[in-house]
Image 1 (cartoon, rainbow, N blue to C red):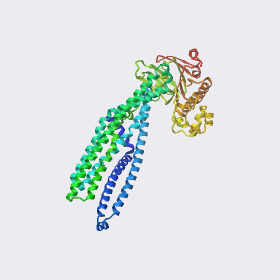
Image 2 (cartoon, rainbow, N blue to C red):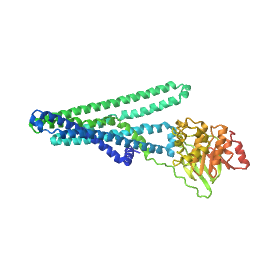
Image 3 (cartoon, one colour):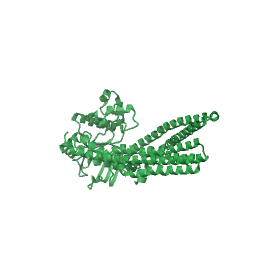
Length: 563
């Protein structure tokens, strides 16, 4: 996806779901700016007119102080209300869009091909969900809204000054638009490279810091601990250099806009003084024009930071944009045509991305309803690849896969820093508390649940911290129970568990898998003993199959690890 396509993808997401609030926020921002200009201009006119009227008793008695006073109070209240409303509306709309962006980005990386690529560098997903998404709030809050309000203020200020003198209005409006928009545009170009370097340096700094914290033992044993510290310091230096460059650019924008404001103010002062001297306008009107010019440049100052960070924002757009419209390229797995068949593989061949050797080669397998299959073989034989192909997580390059809906129980137990309920409903978002309690009881966690002070609302730490390995595995089993699929694919379900816990997990799996088709990848005897058929794999091929009760079945079973 090109840069323009990525920008359109992000902009369409902002626009599609929150256009009314986004427009309302921009209009409220413009209203705030206009109320500020009108308030200062009217105040200057009122003070000047009051001072002149007080020179004589007749003019003092004839001067109406109530209408301007009411206007000043109204504008002050309107400015406060519009500012408050603008902050509420714009931030609410932006935060909602960013939340949806995170969800879409997570789903975009969850498709089969992207998920495998991301597994090699999991920190990248974290940076995309945090740094890059956070950078996108500048697109609306610091670029589009200030741009709209500043341009609107320049036009309105030009119209107001045009009623005083058409030449003054046109010249002031053109000057404001040229300088007020040109300077931030130039700043955005100058800060593009430093902003990109800053984004990259920040990502490198965080990644290296995480590596240092998590790999202290390995780095110390390899004698690389000091080298890692130096690498972190180098990334920090690059980050500081990028920050300095961006700050210098922002300072230059502030100085340039300040000079431009002073030039405009001096021009209005000279031109207004000349008009007043000729009698074309009164002194209060000249003061009004001067104060309009004084406040007309202020809205452009809000563009400073947005322009400086535009490079970072566009970098984030290019990174996340392609994944927003990503579609899972995994073909849908159809149900088998044959009656009483749950799984049917016909001569499938599959290759891991970046590998030249196929993980599966000409594999054919047919599994009936309710049949239990144990897939055995040495590490690297293709057992996990076979389950991944059945689950639709590996795309075959040849052959055909058909299967009833399945759920994959992986070797790793993935738990999140969330409540117990939050970790369970990942399997079935529509689950009610009664179903969650039943699933936990089925997994043997009812006693644990009874001891937890907050029950289902108990928070788990990162990766399920607070639970033992066996409890975490049982929690994953509870999710498996909640996922009511006719085919269960289990990848070494008791690996790393003690004998008692492993036997209990196997027994519970066997009990709750009744009536379901079960395919278990294993090299442990206890996991294969309940199988109706054993399939032995090597080098991505099925070399042997044996049914229960045969001598070959017993021979294959005896060759497995006892525990």
